[in-house]
Image (cartoon, rainbow, N blue to C red; front, side, top):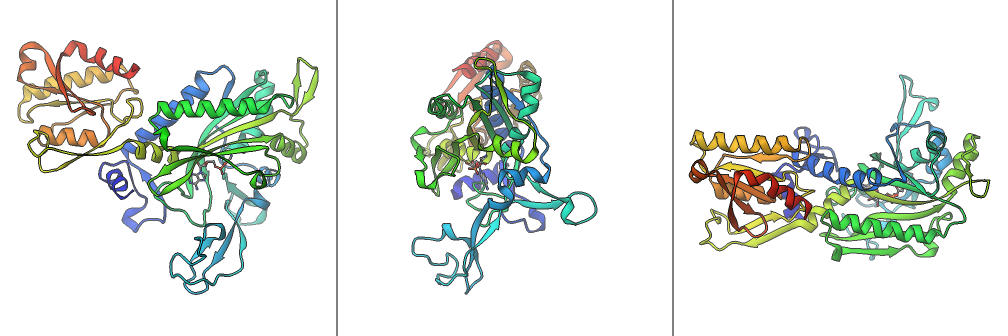
Length: 444
Ligand code: GAP
């Protein structure tokens, strides 16, 4: 984990937030490469589950919602964790996260205050007066907006069941014990789907379909599936409205922990909002000519957790032969085995020497042509600092799959070397073939 965090900071993926002011506990900022990786994850999810499906509707709802939403959903009264405080050192911790020996993780003493329920929603006030009537909450999940906007979608698009509504956006929780880098934070992003089915449908078929869909997607974005485990939440721990919830867990460097969840929530949410708002959220079933409240399957993913799982799946350290031309001063090679679609840069272009203008301008020309071929979707790095070995090292560490080098032979026969991140093998190809080469690799 320490190596991963160090790499993230060194290469500008993720660094501590507000650092020049001493930081803010468990707030993390995503630098240029971090935001590129995050965007690649979100784009891949959106493309696969919204754009490529005929049964999905996208949504981007306001983050602040009427307080009554959270009263109806039950969050205001029950979205809380049991908080205890160590009587000796005053460390606050979730009672259900105390170690098995029930000792305080900070001082080792065993005396705690009686647990009290601590609501996880972050509260603020709209407008200048800090009074009860102006209370609003930063949403603790994106899902509720989907239920609240359900009527808009059915009235506007008249979708046929089953269909889904999908949303990506920020969520906030005043976690008692955030930690493990970006695993548990107070501000994070979710990618959530509410997939509505008929109340008479065999819900477990849809549930299994979503488990499979998520597995296929995780495979495509480079998650090490050997490290993924499905935990069927035991019946006695299920929410009263849920018939099945699966916590999809991942072997993170700090242990096996929840990566995301899939839950069958019945019609609990639509029913709650219908009752509280007084608006009918019923769906007219053309086949049976009945008004029904659909049931729902909910795959809910944290973007940062998925990003951490991708980095943990991709992180590699290889010993380097000291005789290797790439060894330089380092004895090990650190690299990220990212799939091309996740890599922040799809390729890099270098001039062999940094003091030869003719090599530099040729490399810049190749890079500009490649980048222009797929605007916005195919960032190509350019680097001329340090020697070529160091440049390969830098690109390896950020997971760039291919590096093209312009040398003196390029000026004679219009060929470049292409070096493969995984094998470190090099071959020569014609400059006119570079684009086709990358397109082919992208499709693999
Ligand atoms: N709408 C259902 C829901 O929000 P959840 O299990 O509370 O369910 C879903 O959250 C996912 O959101 C989690 O599996 C995790 O990936 C992510 N998540 C939840 N709390 C988080 C936190 N404090 N920091 C980072 N990610 C979090």
